[in-house]
Image 1 (cartoon, rainbow, N blue to C red):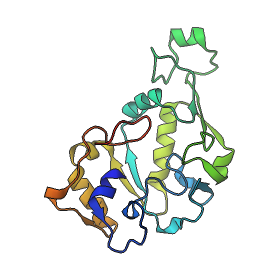
Image 2: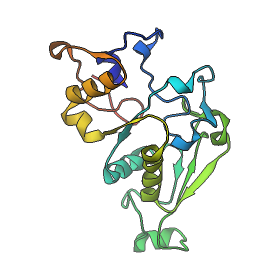
Image 3: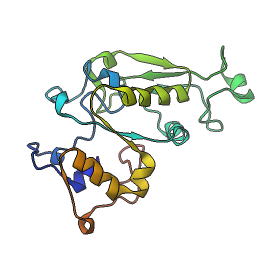
Length: 202
């Protein structure tokens, strides 16, 4: 979102905040894509969801799981600092936690974290969803955005790191915007994602 805010101009934008670039979708950035019409995040009740074009950042599963070990949001599963990410229990896990299967299950509280994308209405307000493992969670969340029947743009995390200007230009053009010229392009050198649990913005 920061890259687009700083480098993409939307000529038809009427929103004075953030140049028309939203930092999350109105149904919550951590919510499942299938909840677009049934869930509304806090402070988003007046947003017209039909005018929002989601840009979905896809990280490779292992790196994503490592980041979940540092900041797991609403996800809950048994793990230790010595073994995380952990898809299947090792001998140490078996001694610490009781398991009945070969995977380490994950429970995700959608909307219960109290953050800005927590639900104010709809399914996420009370929904706790179970997954067979962290890998199953990653797969289901990204699969839903891949298969939705509404427009969205899916972006590889590595492209944000290595080709930010080329990537932002294509996204901005797709949304009907104009990108800042190369000599005015703003780069973020510390973290492609920012905010609590991600890193500083520079």
